Image (cartoon, rainbow, N blue to C red; front, side, top):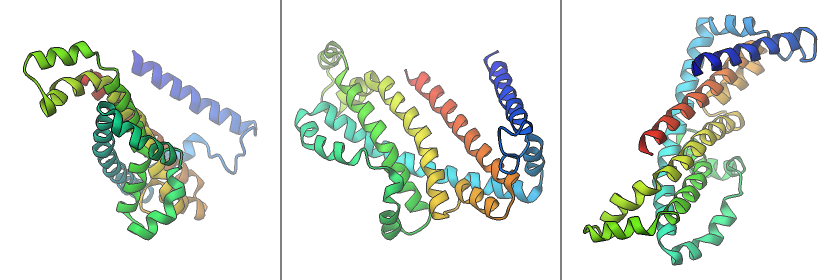
Length: 242
């Protein structure tokens, strides 16, 4: 039933798009009709290019998320468990966190060149902070009685963290994961738009430069669907771990 309601809302949005276009509240030259987008998607050349671009964006996102999760969750655990580590890192985190990932594109290109490593680093930089902050607060909010019970049962050190602290903080970590996952897709596509790296962003740019407006919108549609699919998967994973 929820899926049907979601599809109904999507169809209503598509219908509204076409109506606004027909009455010229949306410029027809810049906003193709839904059926033109569908026809473009049925073209083998567009479909093949879109599939390759989606795969490239997904690869950059996955590499960046893996790096961000590795560093972010570990740093979140450290700052959540150690007041000294938290105090020592707070100024650095507060300084780096507001910097937009796209502002670091020139530095990333010089360091890693144009390609997957550069994209992954920028995605990781953007996704690091939600994971770190959520993990930190999740660890801080763990009930001390749960930790003490773990100690009574013989857990200590890394074992206590792995078997008690991390499971108790899992809902907060899951929230950070969902936030970071959605942000990662946005950053990946934005980096591709700016740098021309393989992916949906460069696909959209290429279609626009070639005057293929409807084909460009298939790239925008693919980015939205990819983001929705990732959100659904990360939400399901978070619920299963919670």
